Image (cartoon, rainbow, N blue to C red):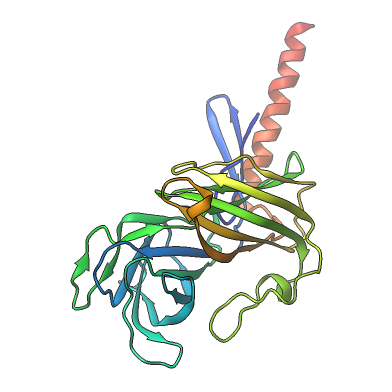
Length: 304
């Protein structure tokens, strides 16, 4: 018997048994996950809309905060919807300033997108974005080519129930260097602590414990570095509690920290549901284990 742990943003794991040429698969439901994505406007055009394509459906847009090239939060996209319905694409429109006046998104402005994925079992494809289809627009469907870049790390909670272990993993799918500092990991949180948002869709950190369970001072993620060494957690917890990761992000096109731009604090939050095998999968797993016992018994008999 061999075990495969599948690396997905909202935690999915599988046990596979290969017995007499038959592959048996038992899956467990995934958790809801909330994550920030930071998108920058790369061109000299004045953009009015933003289309972001993700790799999985069932996403819920929470907020889209716009910051100028000095890092000041100047407004937000006031409207967001999945379009076309049922797809993995979210369209953000109607950018306004903090007073509600219409604005445009200029070069080097960033937009912090907070989105939530709803657990959909083993069918979820991960929690990533698609670079090609994502773009800013000048309105009226006029997309701006090569107008977006991703400036936030890909964060994963990887858990192995059989080994009783868990880890936080960081990756960089963008084209720029990312520097993560002041990394804090909180575990065993309640839903109130790990899944609370204000009226604007911003994650509320005030309810977190005063001291994190784990800390790391800094990480450097090179472009295209999809799996950085993990921050290991002491054990696997299937009690329905939440894990929250807070970290500050700076990005640099040339890999130099001296001219890196600070994007502020981002977060990652996911809960850990009690894992209960689906009935059919549990039956397959039990059958496979029974076959394994029978096969072992037969081998022992042959040796006598």
